[in-house]
Amino acid sequence: MLNNELLNALNEQMNQEYYAAQAYMAMAAYCDYHSYKGFANFYIQQAKEERFHGKKIYNYIDDRGSKPEFTALPAPKTEFKSILETFEDGLAQEEDVTSRFYNLSDIATREKDYQTISFLNWFLDEQVEEESMFQTHIDYLRRIGDDCNTLYLYEKDLGTREFED
Image (cartoon, rainbow, N blue to C red; front, side, top):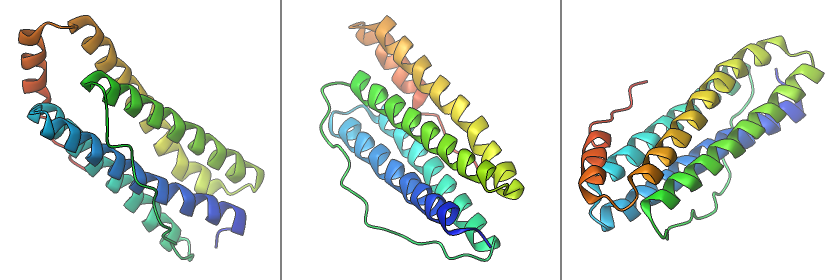
């Protein structure tokens, strides 16, 4: 079984993953409302990935003989000034998630819970990919600027993204 501090932190992170999924769905709704269907698809796929992460933590807590605990989630931000802002907010969210996994790793290391350390390494590696992906999209969107034709092509490309677990 997991010690209480680690269990509480894992449950908090599980809930945070589901919150991230909600936040990405709010970004998708913004994009859909403004007829950016490709960007909406990107965020819908991102939400699927976050729910997958939440379920992965849920399964780990259960596999370790503890009980996953769900809490109320705050409402996500729903208004944005631009597509770029959605990606900047997405990057900030991923950076927050990374710091949370660092904290989890610190607790697991202090408790000498090597199974949890091993489990968390997958997420730490995943966060490198997530932050890099968002930063790349921000760089592209800044480079594109007001070029509607390039934005259309970029959006069309993101419309093909599909999450596979």
